[in-house]
Length: 63
Image 1 (tube, rainbow, N blue to C red):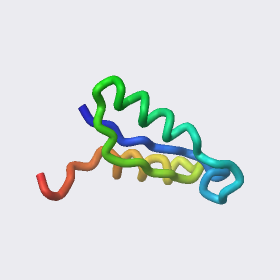
Image 2: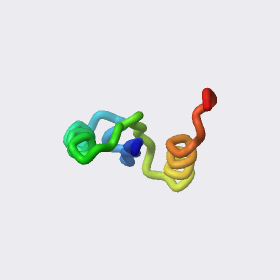
Image 3: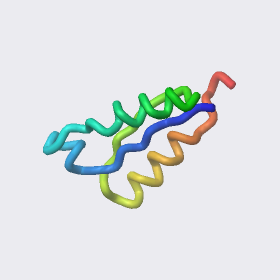
Image 4: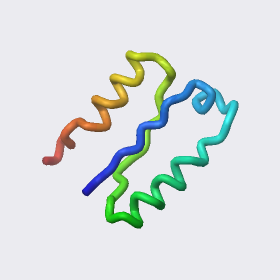
């Protein structure tokens, strides 16, 4: 199984806070048999979230 982390938050994008949850989540997913294939951070807008979801779930071009 694979996973792609989608981090949502303007405060992360502008450096107001650090994204420490992604490292923990990646470790936990790995321990449960997932292969983390990527991580994306998007803004707090519906359009940015939708774009992030679409990109995270898109079929790789090499398949």
